[in-house]
Amino acid sequence: MVARTRQFLLVEPVAKTPYPPLGLMKISTWLKRRYKGCRVFGTIGDEIPAEITRPDRVYVTSLFTWDLEKVVRTVNTYADRFPRAKISIGGIAASLLPDDVERGTGIRPHVGLIKGAEACPPDYSLTFGRKLDASITFASRGCPRKCRFCCVEAHEPGFHVRDGWRRDINPELPRILFWDNNWLASPNFASDCEQIRKLGKVVDFNQGLDARLYDKAVAKEMSTIRLRPVRFAFDNVAMEKHVLRATKLVREHSPGEIRVYVLYNFDDTPEDLYYRLDVLNRNHVLAFPMEYRRPTATKTKFPGPHWNSALLRAMKLTLLYYYRRGMITESRTSFHSIYGRTPNQFVDRLYEIYEYDKTLKRKPTS
Image (tube, rainbow, N blue to C red; front, side, top):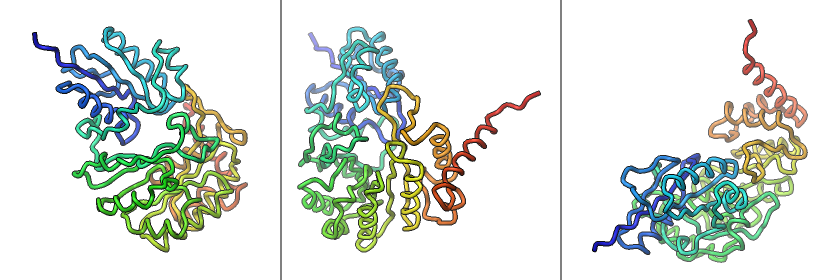
């Protein structure tokens, strides 16, 4: 009697980013190594591949917590369609809100990383509809900082290096994306740079580098790799001197664009946000404002203690309509024309934008 070929279905409920789900790509490799000859299928949402008839197991990932309702619906759809299959749920949102997932599906999700899959390279034959031009990897996991606004600790507890990250690299792809939370804290920093140099590819640490750890020695070492762009974070005013020093060192040692993530709506004020944006703009650095959102299973926004819905809406509109890819350009004239020349003008402008947006939404009366 011929044994039935094992089937596995990997599901991404919501595809909102340009990158495929790395966890599922690693799980694919892990399954193929464990079960020789098995068939692994990937899909987005509720579209069941025609080739799959009776999966032995369905793996469902998650990303943003506010998409959890869609994740739950997707899980239940597959549970109804394949009642004999074991369903596993994981990913960032499931790790942050496991109780919500269990209430909605009756399944306790996996929290954190799957150790076996973590050690495997991604399956680049499974890209979930994306056209990839870069390998994706982590040289380290976790972060030693434990900032109050950050959820990394829940998904990647502790901080450790990954010595085998080079196995994740697809030699046919021209770039490498590193998703490390704080690569500069790694004791393997110098050896990582050496390996990156040998690979000769353009790299992007797209979660940002810790400006507090970016000193002259680091800048000199990093000038030997093709880092494009260079990213930092300006989470609060206390970071100012570190961010300015880091951007100055980058310009002294490396070519290329500098982008800085600017967190707002946590414990800052709108005036505080204006100050940080103004600092970056005066120094000709691209700013990428990022709104803090609580890790809840609802799409409802929760304004921080010094913000309100009108200000958040208006800030988002400025990034959608006035700037490229959500970034505030280096143009001083453009910055002043949109955000004003003072913190008070900034707040007034946001309210004006909000009111104007409301008029556009009103239906004309007969």
